[in-house]
Length: 182
Image 1 (cartoon, rainbow, N blue to C red):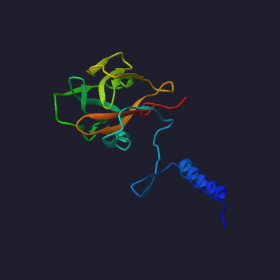
Image 2: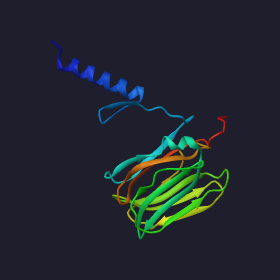
Image 3: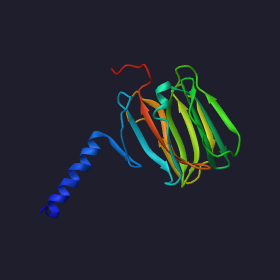
Image 4: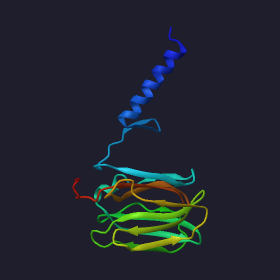
C-alpha cells in the first residue's frame, strides 16, 4: 500500500513530466505545444481574467506582422485583428467604434508596446523599429511597457482574452522571420 508521501511523489513526477514535455491538458485533450520560433519569449499577460481565449500562434507562421486593425472607444480597446504576411487573423472583440488600420512598412516590426489596463485593456501604443508610434485608447488603470526580453527580437504574435472588449493581451516575441540567429 502506498504512503501519502509516495503518492505525492508520483503525482509530482507525472506533473513535472507533462510540464517538461510541453503538454497542454485542455478540455480533456492532450495537445503538444510545439513552437516554430527559434528562441521565443513572451511578456506577462496584461488585463483581467475573464473573456474567451484567443491566440495567433498558428496564423503567425504565415509571415511577419504586416498590419494591425484596432477598434477603440473612449478608454476601451474594443477589438483587434492582425495581418501576418498577407493573411488576416480572426477579429476578436466587439463591434463598437471605428476600426482603424495601421499598415507597417516592408521589413518594419513592432519592438515595444505601451499601454494600460484594469479588468480590460484601456490603451495600446505600438512602437516600431523605424521609430513610428501608433496610439489607441486612453491611459487608465495600471500602466505597462512591454519590450522584448531578448535582444534583436520583435513582436511575432499575440494571445489573450476578449468578449465585447479586449479583456487581456499577451505579447510573444522572436527574431524576424528569415533572420538568422547569430
